[in-house]
Length: 144
Image (cartoon, rainbow, N blue to C red; front, side):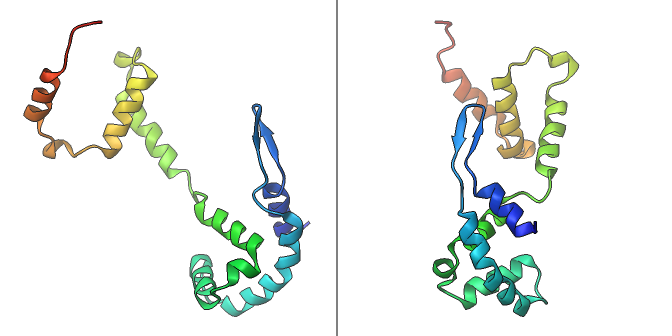
């Protein structure tokens, strides 16, 4: 079994995971039918890396996605898959800095908010603590 058949079988079958149904993304039979033409086409782009080759192909053949819809779906999937787990590693590293042994009772919601702020919030030197305090102080602090 070649790689394109393996990919076609994986993305071409419905999957049920934890009671949730995930429908097939592509038609594996049609993908296998398209592949010989795609292999021939790719032989003209040997000197390109993966992303450059596909960028050129989609540029050179404006109707590629109509001619080869299953291949287009597979290429779209490949461009959306992460190549490394560096982002996940970075999140775990940041989590370990936030949730220490002294903060072991922190709720998952608080941890989530702190991680979001840590990754997306302003840099500490640009943060206006006075304004944040004033906004916080305007809130109703009574326990309901």
